[in-house]
Image (cartoon, rainbow, N blue to C red; front, side, top):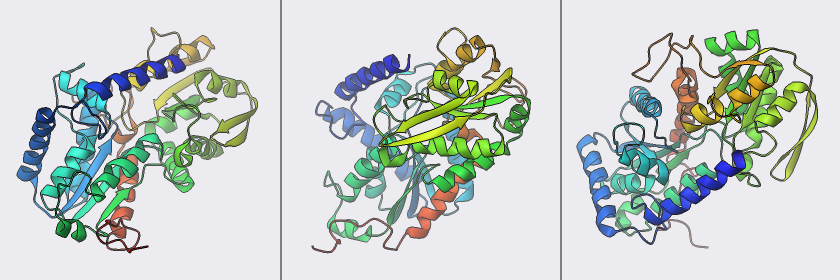
Length: 386
C-alpha cells in the first residue's frame, strides 16, 4: 500500500509541477499572469498586515483538511502571542496542497502560497530581520527544500527583485529555524513531552501507543532525518515499553514492521547508510491507541492510520492482529478543529498540542539568537571573496 501510494504521489507531484503556477521555482510552464496575480495577492497581504521590520515566516508542508487549517491558524495565533514585535505569516511548501486548497478539496476554497511568493513579498516590503521557521518534524526532504532552495534563492536574489543595497542590509539578518527533531536531543525532549500529555499518558498505561511518522522515501535519509524516529522510539521505550514508532515512507518501519516489533525479536533496521539494531520484547497487550507523529492530522492520519475501510491501514492491521485498537479518542481537551468539541472523537496532530508548539517556538528563539552573528546567513553581495 505504501509503495503504491508513494508512486501515486510521485505521479501527482509530476503532474502538479507541469500545471501549478505559484509554487515551483523551476516550473517552466507557469503563466506569468497567474504568477503575478498570486504575487500581488501576497504583496497586498504583507502591505496590509506589516507592523514591524521583523518577520517570522512559518513553513508547513500543507494539507487540504479543515482540521489542519484550524491547526495552522492556532500555530500562527500562538506565534503572534509569543513573539511580540514580530509579524507572522504562514506558507505551504506543497504545490499539490496549495492547488487542492484553492480548488476547494474537502472544504471551501482557501488560498495558501508558497515560500517563494512570501519571501519575495517580505523582501519588497523591506523587512530587516527574517526568520524562516520550519514546521517539519524531522530534518528531511521537505526541510532541505525550504532551506536549500527557497531561502537560498531568496538570499541569492534569484529573480532580481531586490536592490543590492537591500541585499547588503540582509547580511547576517536571515536565519532558518530548525524542525521539531533537528537533533537527537530534540527527540529526547519530544519523548518526555509526549509522555506528559494527559491523553497519551492514560493510553500508554492501558496498552500499546503507536505513533505514525511520515519519514522520507525509501533510500533517502536527508541530514539523518529518518534516524530521529528510531531515537524517539528509544527514548519513549525507556519510559514505557508500550511505546512504538513507525512511519509511512521509511522502509522497515511500516505498520507490518511495527506489528513485528510488538511480537518481539531482534531487528536490523536500515536508516540511510546506517543499520540500527533494535531489540523488542514480545508485548502481549490487547489494546492500542494510534497517534499521528505529524504536525497536523490530515490524509495520512485519517486514511493511512485510521481508515476502518482500508484493510492496510494501521487501524485495520492492528485490529486484525488481535489488538483492540483505536485511532480516534474522546479525552483530548485541546481540540483546534472548530467543528469539534471536547469529548467527541478526535485525532490530535502534534501542532495541536500546546506543549509541542512550545518546542517549535524554542527553535525559533534559538534562530533569533543567531541574528547578527556568523551563524546567520550571508548574502553574496557581502560574502568574503575567496
